[in-house]
Image (cartoon, rainbow, N blue to C red):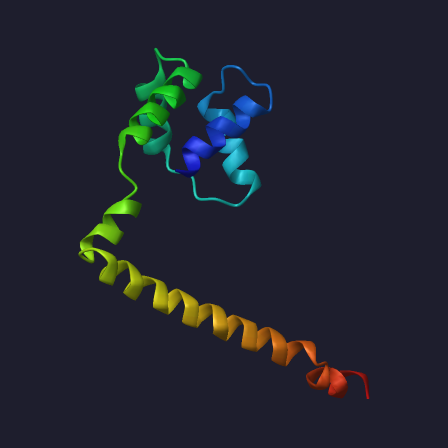
Length: 114
């Protein structure tokens, strides 16, 4: 992943054709470990392709995947499952509000400025 990130950083920096040495310089600049085999693998996989086209194709594939959001509500079996799922969310909201109320009174900060 860091090799791909270094490649994209080089492209964003204006280098239209980054080399393995360019990627090594980027990785060295942040103290990352350099894996020559991964750099070689990246270049072998993208050698005849445009990176923007590869990203666009990947986005299309990701759009086809389900995020699983609606399926979770349906597993509960109707209204009872959705209501049960809403209750923990309401309880956590109450807890957050209670914490905010406790911290907004300012009493806990008195020791810092004495």
